[in-house]
Length: 419
Image 1 (spheres, rainbow, N blue to C red):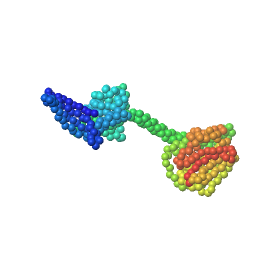
Image 2: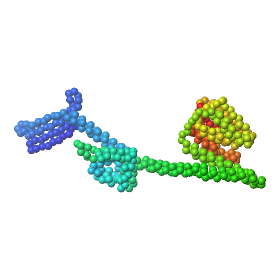
Image 3: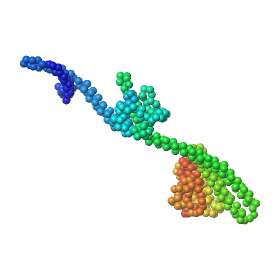
Image 4: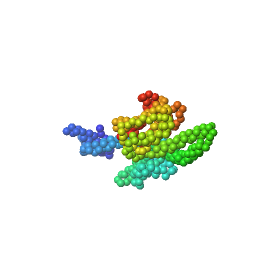
């Protein structure tokens, strides 16, 4: 393997040749032979003179340089990012990915002014500076900007660049480009959805205010006037209608209050806890609902193994009220409701069992979702009470559920609190 250079004059021929030799020790070395062949005349027409230089170190560096160039070329061609070189504001080199990104061929881009691929709106080049530093006067940095494809489409990109120096003189700028159009589209869509959610939250807050002030107040007034009319009316038919109005209005007020409580609970992210005996708290709930219990002729059997302390928020009384009032509402008249607080390992399990018609298995997974409920033999409801239970138990990190009453007819609603 050799590289031969030769030139001649009228009576002399010069040779320069690189080749390999095997040394006495068995090593392969590179040499450069420089020789002179001169016309001599006489019996020996030519005279040969030359020197041989060991160039192994230089040759190894050249070979390593070629290998490095090949590796860089491979990376340049194979990388998924667009890469290139700009010199005097024109493209001097680009890789295939950059061509694909913009829809140009390599021949079209080489020599093209680099400013041609930026949109007219230069202000966008400063977008994203809170994430990426701007490119400084030295040509170093990362920036979020846009580029125009050959077909006129504008894409979002992240551009990084760094100058090329040779003996302290700039010979251009290398750049790398990532297409982030899909990411920016997602970001813009997310921003749009966020703004829509903010508007919906504003509407929800407005709705809650309407419930608390504009609906509950008139409903309470209707209740008061209905009660007044019932006291002075003597006609049985009119009294019957007034009674129906009073019942419907009471249901309306209950619904509005539940909806208001539910929306208020949804706005709560964290709650404070205190050590409370949940057994005593449930006994207070039974006392608070004594009027409903008596009007239905229901017997409530309460059982616990003494005080049952847990770190909870007083909001849990809403859980107990909803579970017990549902058992009263959907259980039979003169029936029995069992309330048991059970020691279940590291939690207290509060179970409320009724002897009603029970719940189909297909309906059980949806009972605690807002406005989803099973048919209760003609008894209408919105499911807000159990949705409130679900939300409060979520704030406490507790479990909840429903099962068939093991004693026969009816259901058992249960919740758990950490000890």
